[in-house]
Length: 103
Ligand SMILES: [Zn+2]
Ligand SMILES: [Zn+2]
Ligand SMILES: [Zn+2]
Image (tube, rainbow, N blue to C red; front, side, top):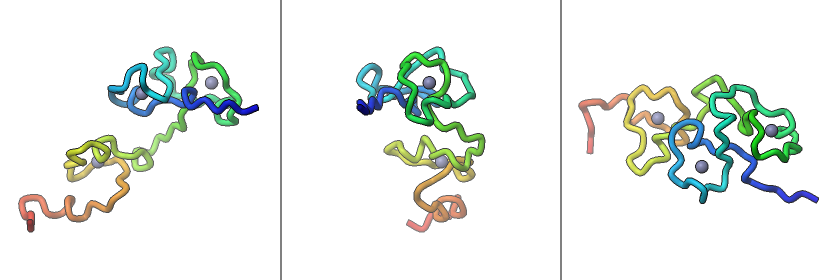
């Protein structure tokens, strides 16, 4: 029964920065949902089959500490000393050694 289309989940990059994958992207790029702050209830239950649904198919978290840092996923990594976003690796070696790098 479940066809499990990933295409129905919102693309993080499309909504928060820029998705470079375009039509190759496995996640949803839906212009009508851009700027929408409401998570689709049906989607949360896995029941929304409308790929042009104008509600968000992504869990929206107001707390930025709960949102993975976009830059940390880049090859250069996150270099912001006081980055408000969540990091998967502890960054105590970045936050306190500004101007005193011991490498
Ligand atoms: Zn995408
Ligand atoms: Zn929906
Ligand atoms: Zn960061």
